[in-house]
Image 1: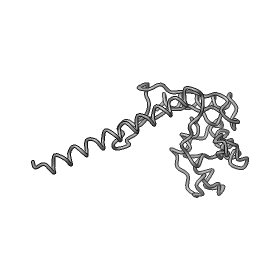
Image 2: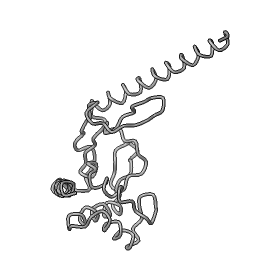
Image 3: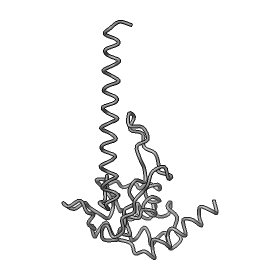
Image 4: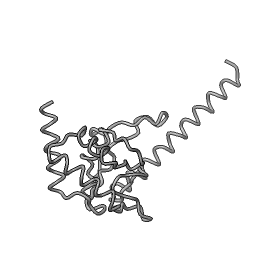
Length: 173
């Protein structure tokens, strides 16, 4: 190994250390905001809501009706495939304007606490700062629940009913 290779290796190590330091600083700031109850929303399109100039979610009435319909159909005994078919047959578009719905999107919507006005922060985390690989937070880090973070689209009873039905379905399969 010559001197230039050694210098390049040292510069690469320094660069990696700086990147790690910056990543840790960003995480510290985000966690501090979470602990203080300030919600951190990292999405741009979320069916039923838009982000206000203050960063707080605001209800989009036409989209909120679609969300309520999805919850209602589920409680009536329709699974995500039937709901997908209903939405597509009725020409109801996704938040991104697509005609075709994903069953996994519908399933995630039915479990998303944001629809009852809450925000659970740190559901996932960056496991590797170099690759940016994210992992589901299964207790490795604290997560934070902010209640009454914004106006709800779904009432608490409806949401809890859906969670119970989902649990029953999971046990049966």
